[in-house]
Amino acid sequence: MMKSILLCSSNPMLVKNLYGILRDEGYGVETVEHPAFAVQLVMDHSFDLVIMDAEPFGLSAEDAIQIIRTMLPGLHVLSLDTEPNAASGIPAPLDLQKLTRTIHAIAV
Image (cartoon, rainbow, N blue to C red):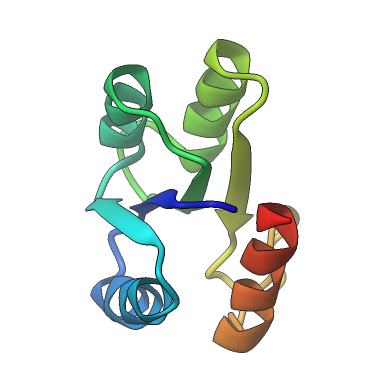
């Protein structure tokens, strides 16, 4: 079963809500605000899943996901699109219950 999740988001409400839900369900959760930090962490630590939120500046979430998937092709990466009508990942508005079901499905 999945144990360790890296949550990358600069949205404090998303981090607070999702962090709490995942911790309550027994996952170890590490958080970072920027995709560049997420790339650095996956090189230094072992995670079972990376959850990446879009970032309006700096290294884009899409570029960070591509780098992570190139370095660690077996690592599951979920992209969260917090903008309505976004083209990739889990669409906005985010349904935290659906998201946690998706995480559990990956954990199996």
